[in-house]
Image (cartoon, rainbow, N blue to C red; front, side, top):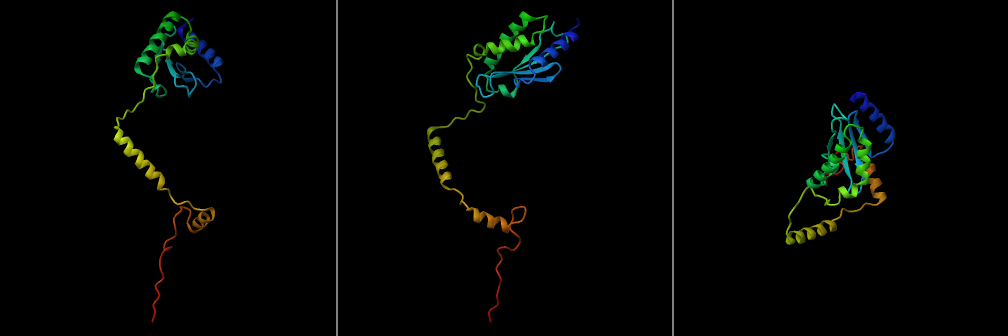
Length: 179
């Protein structure tokens, strides 16, 4: 069997296994994404795997460079990729995508054990800035916009055109000449 036939068979198998699974996404016939863990789980990550031309005799390319993984530290990403590479080496020459995805799911806790969520923007603020900022926030909260009743809103809507603007001259004053 040629590498291309192996790829076709594995592609069909992946489609049938993961049909309807929102964790699996086929980007192209040689590129896939698989989410390990729930979307709202802080220890979840997204594996992006693409097949080279001679796959499965050649190792697939594994990447964690997706936006979903922006909270994972570079050290943790490197650790996951190194552990996944060990699995690839063990399965080289055979269809391995299902094995890789399932192994990653089973070992999610181990892979993410040293994970500390990374914040992308770090700001340094002194305590006095925090105190000043909190007092200005409370002032903003007190300056609420006047609430209109339903009847006031209806009257306002009745006087405006379709863009919400009052008609020209709505506030003009009639000038009366007194003799």
